[in-house]
Image (cartoon, rainbow, N blue to C red):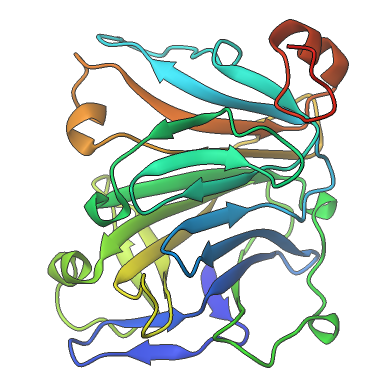
Length: 288
């Protein structure tokens, strides 16, 4: 795959790091047959980062704080029900400067699914992962109907895939402060897209997104990768799931310590039954 920035503004500094700069990024997945808008990444004026998913056509699902017990060995099935609640709304993921991470939606749900994470300035590495299945169930990107004139306000980032009908697409992101990113890149970066290699020697093309110059978050860089993965939901043609809100690396990588993360998945095909079982975060369906 390759990245394309439809109306992006390149942001170049003397240290050689080139990124996009915008307050809001809209991620588009282009297969040739479909050109689907799948998520937004927003650098808020107060320093928070919001990840939203307003483009999916199914809104009934589960939001959860998933706990990973210590000393687990081998493949395990983690419970999303134990720390979960049902919802009939597509939630917003918020990560605040002090490390408060949560799912919310103004005027629609209670902010019950949340946790304390490292502050934004402490993160160095994974930020979130989203899995997207059934691109025809997402709102389509039609340039003629979009506002493209102000890239600082809104930039469209497009992942162009080689397969016309991928089973599932995985979007992964990392966060690095500018100095840390500079240390992790060898040579001069001719951004805002570049290639990287993981520990298994697999090569990924990444897109580097930042807030505008002068923004409170201007030194924060979000690195995006996109890849095709096996189908994740055999019961539905469409699927959207998300993981984020991770603990510090020292906790996540220590198998003797409990860790946790925030998770959601859509759709759920029997939302009333799920509400009766685990309750809901929705304002108007308080069956808790």
